[in-house]
Image (cartoon, rainbow, N blue to C red):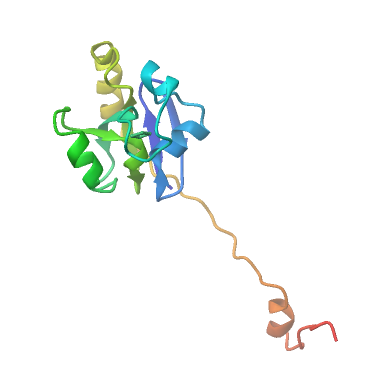
Length: 147
Ligand code: FES
């Protein structure tokens, strides 16, 4: 499973592949928004342009979805590597800086450290789920259909 390394918060969060970065951050209590976004945001529709993150490392190329048409339009004048968290889908491990518009220069050392440390991919053992009646069928018994 992917790991998202939140550099500003010095936290790593494991998530399911396909997780929405905004929803993940909010579920983990990580502040995505500056003051303007805290006062009001679009709730993840890609309209308010307040959920910036800077992607500073990816475990493998294409760890994220490609920028959406909304991002291509709204982030034209923003630095390379910036994404809108609400438009970003995590497929593999990444490192990000939340609120890169705020005090980013003071995070240079933390970003360098986050980039130097390899990003992990967490292996999760998945137990097979046995459906009701499956065990009896495998043992040659007829499933109990309640009659
Ligand atoms: S939450 Fe409004 S653009 Fe992402």
